[in-house]
Length: 193
Image (tube, rainbow, N blue to C red):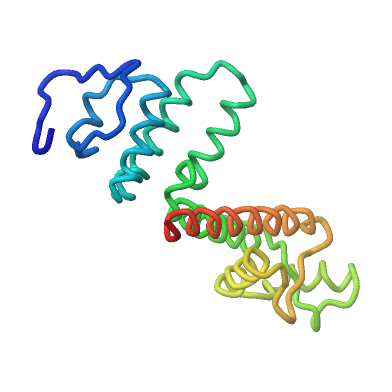
C-alpha cells in the first residue's frame, strides 16, 4: 500500500492485521476505525521503526478517546493530558505552558504589586507608605521572580511575596513542578525508543 492515496474514507473498523506498510499521513485524514485498530496501528508503526508516525497516531488516538468516552473522570484526565503534553508525545506543549504561566504570574506580580523588597520594607506601615511612593521592583524583576519560583521553587534573593500573595506563589510553584515533570516524562518517551 505504499504511495497509496485515498480520495474517500478508509474504513478499518474491526480490521485485524499483523503488518501494514502504509504512511500515517496518507491515511489519517480519511481513516475510520475503532480503538483496537488505533492500538494496532501504533504498534505497527513502532515495529516498522516509524516512531514519529506512531507518535502522530497516538495523538490522534487520544483525540478519538476524547470524543468517545462517556466517563467524566476519563474525559477530564484526557483533556489535561491533551492540553499539557499532547497525550505524552508533544513535549513542546509543556514548554509552551511553562512560558505562558511564567509570563502570566510575572505580570500578576508586577501589575498587582504583589512583591516586596526584603531590605526596604520592615513592617506593614512602612510597606504601605513605600508602595504609595514607588514600586519596589521592575517588570523584568517580577518575571525573574516568577521564573525562579516556577523552575526551582526559590524566590530570588531580595524579593518576597506580599503577605496576601503567598498562595499565588505556592500555586505557581506546584504548576511548575507539575509541568516540569510532564515535560521530562514526555521528552523521555519521545527520545528513548
